[in-house]
Length: 371
RNA sequence: GGGCAGGUACCCAAGCGGCCAAAGGGGACUGACUGUAAAUCAGUUGUCAGACGACUUCGGGGGUUCGAAUCCCUCCCUGCCCA
Image 1 (tube, rainbow, N blue to C red):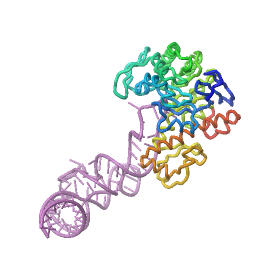
Image 2: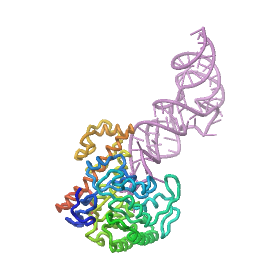
Image 3: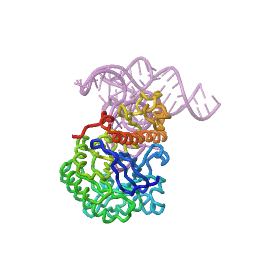
Image 4: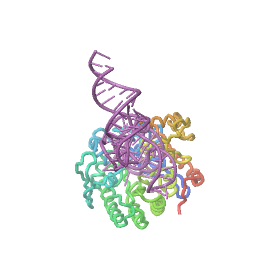
């Protein structure tokens, strides 16, 4: 992909209500937003080859600082030519900062303003992350978009959310200080749980920083859809129009529609691949379908008759169910292809609707209108 | 023909007088999964009932006992060994 624009500029191409269609340039190509990014935690989108990712239509792929630092080690990845070269994905990439894992893995024994001491889930060994070390690791990995080191709190706990928000802000400033590579875009992260005043304060702070993009974190971690929507509605008008907004870790079809309706441009989620491996499929029309269910045993139809993915073009539900029930590893690949394609294509369809000015009508069935 | 070991729910398999509608696996069925310690996790699995509970089960038949999957008799079947 040739890049004719300045890296890390965001161009707002169309707007329909609060829904946006845009273009974000990276050194490995442009992101046409809204966009859905598959998650490849350990430098692989589980069960999917890079060639398959391309065929599915993926543009942005995520990987994870925490996991790659522990194994194989970020310095080894750098020695092997960086993450793009290492995993042979030559499109845009994003690495998470490791903050989420350090906290969600639970064994972060010692959290202070300075950083976090935690234990490896692999061998129990003790490690320490700071905003500076997270940036250093992400520079070794070499993704196009890197994330600030943040603290993701229990969204309902006001005092903790407040404390984590302030810490996240201070850490963002340190990440920006520590950053040394010009070919990577560092995104700050808005926190604040489900609390409107904190979300507002956090959005204002992160918006005031000089970053090419802004992430919204700490959502889809146990709160209700209504609470997530409300948080997005508080943040949306505060964030600058000329930067992409990335809603971290969120990605069911209805979440994409409702996120875009509230100004979000970038999504990522493990759900399509995890559900693919765990034997459920998602349908764009008609909701979710659990292919394990007995009635599909002799069903000659594809998962989704309207879907154009390789799996739906080629295989029957009966065959796919057989693979699942027999625990054949091909099932993970074929169902992940379908689920990823569904979300990636949905994001593209949304983009087209926004450009056409028909977003609300086209997605009325999934849309919960903003307040 | 003789000897030995067995026959338990869809399958394998524990139990060897009451706490047994019967452990544990497997299979089957159902559900969950949102910046991936996940090809993971949870529930159900004799019948009827929402639950209490009721009813029919441990190769067949017959006994012993207040009470049997568990003890006795007998028949049938399976595996292994010896002739």
